[in-house]
Amino acid sequence: MLPYVQFKKAWLTVVDVQAELRLRGERFNRFLPNSILAKKLAMLVNTEEKQEAMTLLEANNTLSDEIVAAKRRELVKEAHLLARVTLAEALDAAGQVYVFGNGTYQRFDSEPREPDFVEFMEYGVVRDLWHQRVAPPGTIPISPASAGAKADSSTPAASKDAKSPSNLKPMANSASRAKSTDTEDNSSSINDDDGDHKRPSPSRTKLETSARAFANRQVSKATAFLWGKRVTQVACGAAVAYALTDAGEVFCWGGNKRQWRYFYDEVTA
Image (cartoon, rainbow, N blue to C red; front, side, top):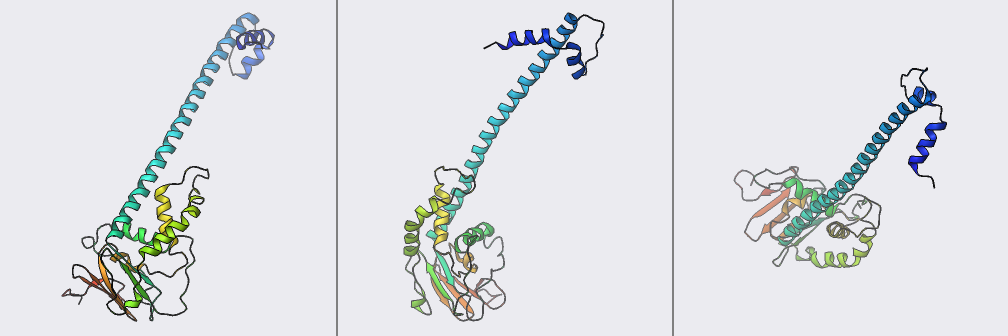
């Protein structure tokens, strides 16, 4: 194979030098001999080769930077997912309450108003986590055949319904069963963002597995406020719900206010 240097020398001897200079927009004296014009063309070609080499080097560096940036974005995304999983596990350790159905008068179907910042700091993050669990995107809400509502509470301590003990069911066992049976299904669907066959993200798998237990179920979003408040007993009536914590706090939900209130507060009682 002919080396590039020799090919360039041969090309300069046989090419129409004046035509090449005109193509490059270079001004020259047409009465000069071709040997002088060929040297000028060789200088222009060398300059073009240097610019091309610099362009290729910058493109290669940019590609490397993009690869590094993509990996860092994945690490940041995984860190955010891990933080959400850790927060959800910490809140689960302090108990959660689930209300199935809308209630007799459709009082349990809407979200509560956002509480005060001092009362519940970073409530938006907790609310988003709760919505991702009980009403994940893509699920079809099922309208309950009956208008009644059931309240379930899961806490570190023993849970007992203050009104009807049969309405309360521990959710830990069902969640663990759903987690053990749905892990394999999640591993094939959590890579929708990149489309490759990388190892599934453990944090994303945990979040999606916890949401599968409530797929296609009518679960109230209002109890996000009670998440992590160590609720031990729940009573759910036709239009009012009460929640009792292990510290003796009583929370009430009902009416048109769409807001959890301290039952023994002087202003709202």
